[in-house]
Length: 357
Image (cartoon, rainbow, N blue to C red; front, side):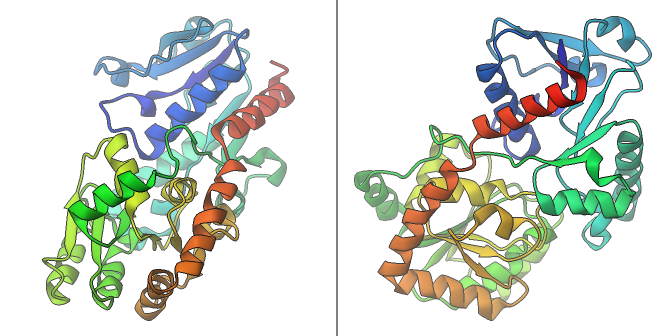
């Protein structure tokens, strides 16, 4: 039996970020592995809150886990893979931990001090309890090795993926309908946190004529900075803020955008960039962290610390139908190379290598 700790996948929709990635990976694993029993494990503190992720698969079962009883609760398991930042003490079987990013540790300037301390302790504890670590990018693998002195042979970079059934180019009628509703716009997706760099993006879009900015994401500790940028640049009437958007609506918004801007200063992977590529939306993307590794040659890379560079990249895409068409063609091609099925098969091979299961 393979035990997967999936507490982060629970909760009400929409399921984005780490929770959405875990759901997609587990779903793909269960599509390619139909014989080996798979236990989907939830910490008791998460179990009792309900709204668990329960995919329909004959070989999948849901389990609650709680130290020190996991030796009994998971007595048939031959490998435990924690898909987010939690690793129980028991049972003593090969343990695999996914580290999605190290943002609070590597970039404490963007986090509250108490959050950095709390998360830093959890990272170290989980890594110390693990035999192997999985990261979604080579960039992240290098950070884990450098930060925690983990032996490189214990760290495995396996990229996330994208579901082409959910993220795909829109037909022309749908594009026309959304643009009739919203006009010409650039879209950006993500929590309003400082590392997403949305304040600079607001300033960059303010320099573009007749172009709106659609910001899709929940307000967090970077919201005040974004609101200040909107007021300072006179963008109040040109920025549309949205949150709690369904996947169907997000597909429409992303597919009809004249461009998608991913101007993050730090990403462990950058799933929204890959989803934009799958939709054929021209992507102007930060050259920071893992993002060049994810997008390959399918995006226009810019220095996201430079407002002029962001504005210039967006202006090139908006003014050049040829460049927009080229990026729109390369995006889906790149996305087809990075699927959740490919990620699941790489994980499955690693399970066999580590535990023979």
